[in-house]
Amino acid sequence: MDIKEIQSLIKFVAKSGASEVKLEMEDVKITIRTGSASSTPETTIVQQIPMAQAPAMPVAPAPAAAQEAAAPAAEQAAPAADDSKYITIKSPIIGTFYRKPSPDKPPFVEVGSTINQGDVLCVIEAMKLFNDIESEVSGKIVKVLVDDSSPVEFDQPLFLVDPS
Image (cartoon, rainbow, N blue to C red; front, side, top):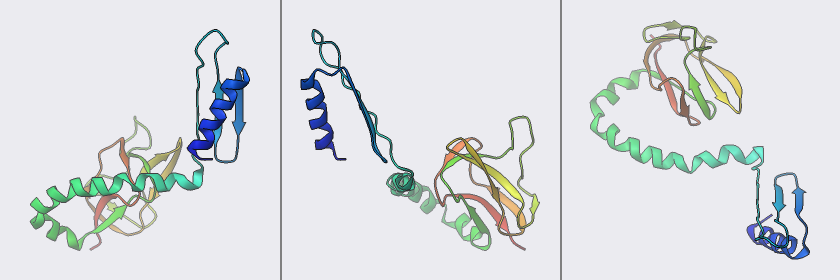
């Protein structure tokens, strides 16, 4: 449903004198409420995005973040060369990054921790679901690249691991 169809639906409901109309389709849910005949009509539109399109939306802000990160990366060219021997563990999903299983527990891993393949490194909350992020490599945690309780994007670096 495009914006012109929604606008014509709003006009139709306003002319018809109905006080409320609800329309639900597989990817859109719209509720239109109008006031009484003596008051100015009030219109409310609620649109839900289908699950299949949700991962596509954050792709637009990512280039802006990459451009912002490009300037500091250029200034730190020497440390970046040292990081080339490390394996970067990246976020497999979009969500909120947590280093601890709960606020009163210790972090899953610290800098210097030795990890094995399959060890839980962190939790990423996406849509009220907490997803354990497991290591795909064995080694030693060299650096944690994300602050606790901060949002992460798909494929964003989370940890640097020394595989040796």
